[in-house]
Image (tube, helix red, strand yellow):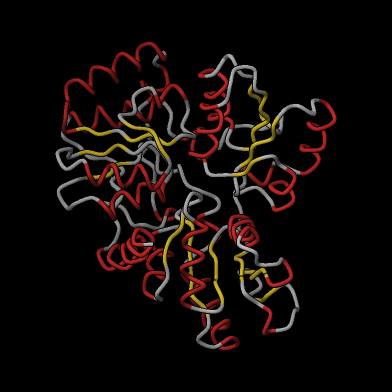
Length: 367
């Protein structure tokens, strides 16, 4: 069993035969193991996962959706989560004690989730509540560690997804005057602005310096944004939007709300991964898209909808590097280990952390 802190975990050395095997051999082995393990095995795959692995997914979706589907799949003992660490944690929180959640490569983390840890959050909460009093409710994006979800759950807050952030923020503002939004400042800013909160009423909390970066009148502050971001979506910049407009004015720009406020404001459409997929899948033939999200998904949409013109808003983008840690060799090795009676890389969240994190998730569900 492994601790929930990614940096305390050690990825077992992959036997050399897996790296030396051809893709054809690995694919054949994966099909064989899936058949042999049958209903005991369940494979959720995130939309950003690489194609050579996603082909084996029993279901594809966003992080919370996959965790929920895993929890509803009571007959599978082994859940091989093809995503990143915080997603596997959420799956462990929501599944039952008789199920094991495995991550094929423990190095598949998330830079955004790593930008907020428990100690930083405790210090921030102490300073902010000392200054603002009992006027703050914490919210955290599901792209966060189990410990951060637990902190939020213990302090009356909830998790949010990019799909339901607006509804959860409305609920939160009905509870308290101010929101502390972790760990992605861009989703928090974009959602609050969409709800009519002016930028002048938002401040950024710097967890490294333990300070609010802007000096504005205390009474005006409504959103306290954690200084975190997605390393993929922050690479879509306003110059990419301008270049696309100049080159092809008829190409629609569709971006994820983890992009900066400037980019989402300049785009034609902004929404969750599910929203992006729906927009492309429902568009008429001949529609042109410049999409600001992870490259594996953009390439997949390009392949799925050849009657449309799909390209990345940033032509120099690469796939999410940590998501790409889940590759065929590690995936097949995990299936082989399960078949041989071993359980590598089991993600186990402490019971008390799990209980508190589930509070935050359930509050979101009730909203």
